[in-house]
Image (cartoon, rainbow, N blue to C red; front, top):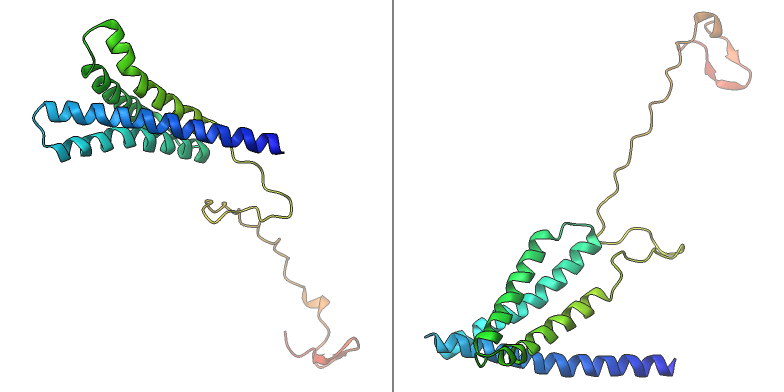
Length: 180
């Protein structure tokens, strides 16, 4: 138990350290590229936030859609597009050499790898509820209930089955045979 907690804590610290550094580098490259192409400083930061956080949001959206059994195609295309924007900003700010491009791409690739690992670590299908728990969740779609088949129609009772008018039935003294 202690070993599992220590391992989880170490994983979280590594995730936070790499995510913070890679995210800072990716934000900086997008910001610097935006400013270098004539945009004001605040728009550079706005672009950096939009590009980098959209990749994270879209990854979360894909995870939620998979759990719900909904299609993820368009969201996946958008995720790839925003990841490519981030990577392009990394490479555009690099020294124009093979090693310059590789080294500049590392933060973006590390950040995207972390997002992928974190978002893919949860099961795609939620676990089955325990038997003593309610089966429906607050957000579940209502189940379609099929109507019960109609009761069989009994043929009308014949006049011979009814007691004569005015005769009291012994098992039902309050009922008199005058009502037909």
